[in-house]
Image 1 (cartoon, one colour):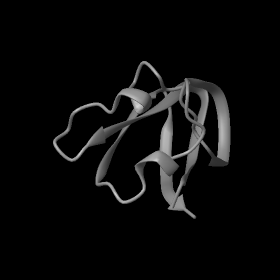
Image 2 (cartoon, one colour; image 1 turned 135 degrees about the horizontal axis):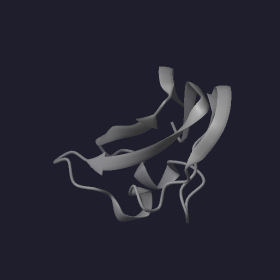
Image 3 (tube, helix red, strand yellow; image 1 turned 120 degrees about the vertical axis):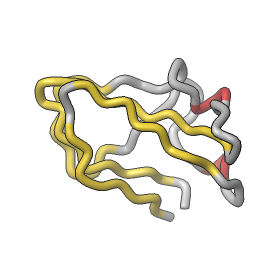
Length: 82
Protein backbone atom coordinates (compact mmCIF):
# COMPACT_ATOMS: atom_id res chain seq x y z
CA UNK A 1 0.00 0.00 0.00
CA UNK A 2 0.96 3.63 -0.21
CA UNK A 3 -1.11 5.25 2.56
CA UNK A 4 -0.33 5.04 6.25
CA UNK A 5 -3.22 5.69 8.63
CA UNK A 6 -3.00 6.16 12.39
CA UNK A 7 -5.65 5.98 15.07
CA UNK A 8 -4.06 8.39 17.53
CA UNK A 9 -5.07 10.58 20.44
CA UNK A 10 -2.66 13.48 20.89
CA UNK A 11 -5.16 16.08 22.12
CA UNK A 12 -2.67 17.18 24.77
CA UNK A 13 0.51 16.21 22.98
CA UNK A 14 2.11 15.46 19.66
CA UNK A 15 2.93 12.66 17.26
CA UNK A 16 5.19 12.14 14.25
CA UNK A 17 6.26 9.10 12.23
CA UNK A 18 9.73 8.25 10.97
CA UNK A 19 10.48 5.44 8.51
CA UNK A 20 13.61 3.33 8.75
CA UNK A 21 15.11 0.84 6.33
CA UNK A 22 15.42 -2.87 7.14
CA UNK A 23 18.71 -2.21 8.97
CA UNK A 24 17.14 0.44 11.21
CA UNK A 25 18.70 3.42 9.44
CA UNK A 26 16.63 6.51 8.76
CA UNK A 27 15.32 6.91 5.19
CA UNK A 28 16.19 10.53 4.20
CA UNK A 29 12.82 11.60 2.70
CA UNK A 30 10.98 9.95 5.60
CA UNK A 31 13.31 10.85 8.49
CA UNK A 32 12.32 12.38 11.80
CA UNK A 33 13.48 15.77 10.53
CA UNK A 34 11.31 15.45 7.41
CA UNK A 35 8.26 14.27 9.35
CA UNK A 36 5.41 16.65 10.01
CA UNK A 37 4.63 17.02 13.73
CA UNK A 38 0.94 16.80 14.56
CA UNK A 39 -0.13 18.59 17.74
CA UNK A 40 -3.48 18.64 19.52
CA UNK A 41 -5.05 15.99 17.26
CA UNK A 42 -7.47 13.17 17.96
CA UNK A 43 -7.83 11.29 14.69
CA UNK A 44 -9.21 7.93 13.70
CA UNK A 45 -7.48 7.97 10.28
CA UNK A 46 -4.61 10.45 10.45
CA UNK A 47 -2.45 10.20 7.33
CA UNK A 48 1.00 11.45 8.30
CA UNK A 49 3.06 13.48 5.85
CA UNK A 50 6.71 14.23 5.35
CA UNK A 51 8.38 17.36 4.01
CA UNK A 52 8.66 16.22 0.39
CA UNK A 53 6.39 13.15 0.50
CA UNK A 54 2.64 12.80 0.93
CA UNK A 55 2.51 9.01 0.90
CA UNK A 56 4.60 5.82 0.87
CA UNK A 57 4.49 5.14 -2.89
CA UNK A 58 8.28 5.64 -3.21
CA UNK A 59 8.81 2.71 -0.83
CA UNK A 60 6.61 0.09 -2.53
CA UNK A 61 8.25 -3.32 -2.50
CA UNK A 62 10.80 -2.36 0.18
CA UNK A 63 11.02 -3.57 3.76
CA UNK A 64 10.66 -0.66 6.18
CA UNK A 65 10.27 -0.11 9.90
CA UNK A 66 8.02 2.49 11.46
CA UNK A 67 9.19 4.59 14.38
CA UNK A 68 6.49 6.52 16.21
CA UNK A 69 7.49 9.57 18.24
CA UNK A 70 4.77 10.25 20.82
CA UNK A 71 4.65 12.91 23.49
CA UNK A 72 1.60 12.84 25.78
CA UNK A 73 -0.17 10.80 23.11
CA UNK A 74 -1.65 7.36 22.58
CA UNK A 75 -1.38 5.27 19.43
CA UNK A 76 -4.24 2.79 19.23
CA UNK A 77 -3.66 1.31 15.77
CA UNK A 78 -2.03 1.84 12.42
CA UNK A 79 -2.44 0.35 8.96
CA UNK A 80 -1.02 0.63 5.48
CA UNK A 81 -3.69 0.86 2.78
CA UNK A 82 -3.67 0.76 -0.99
